[in-house]
Image 1: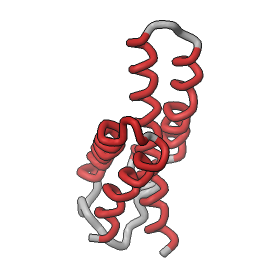
Image 2 (image 1 turned 60 degrees about the vertical axis):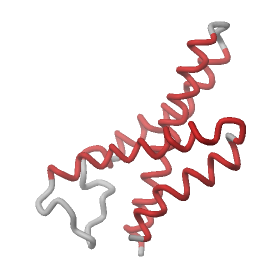
Image 3 (image 1 turned 180 degrees about the horizontal axis):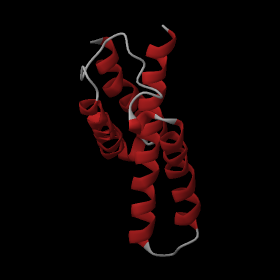
Length: 114
């Protein structure tokens, strides 16, 4: 239960610390990335408290994590290169999606070492 609570608390704390002006939307976007756990339905059993998610579920593999890192790093770079407000907004949202996914993977990774 603590693990699931961390998937809400950590994004909230990150949003309050780094995205203070838009902490509500930032928190919502990062929490929404928990949808990545949809890949758990492919496993049998769906939930196993002793299983390490990283490397086991398709959306929790190294190639997926590289994509999440790109979503975190690239949008701010692209967003700064444009004068279009809608493109900047989209870049900011993609950045938060990448951050939320990376936080999710880090929290899941903690379960693998404990």
